[in-house]
Length: 160
Image 1 (cartoon, rainbow, N blue to C red):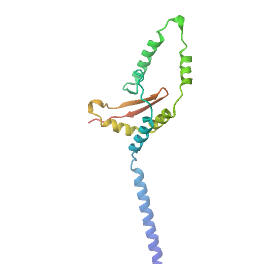
Image 2 (cartoon, one colour):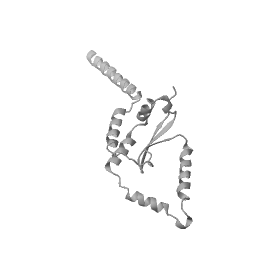
Image 3 (cartoon, one colour):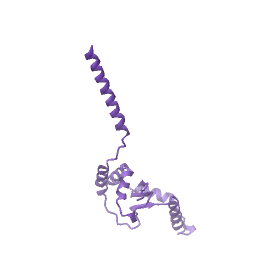
Image 4 (tube, rainbow, N blue to C red):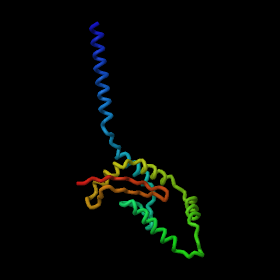
């Protein structure tokens, strides 16, 4: 009878200990595996050819949410009023035609996919190592792979 009670107490202590360990491990925040994320994105994007088009912007930063709207208005003014009204262009048809003929390579798709899988914390951690004059508190970094893939990383910044 005493051995049954002792076994029951040992089992009870083990169950309580296991439940305590499980509850404490759940509260520990999990850190992203940054090195493997960088390795996958680097391998996928490293296969892309380097573009030499000066009009294409590879990395864009957006400080002000209104800045994107201002940029679009300026672009519309440049393209919308650069031709006479007798020679109207159908911009929608034009852009549709480009979209239809743009074939994504497997390398572009893979690069875009792995960039989208990267955690913001990993990218921001990399930017925190930059010199102070190159860092900004609360900043968005946009990486544009092609016309259809732009990945945004939001960094809250930290003050030193």
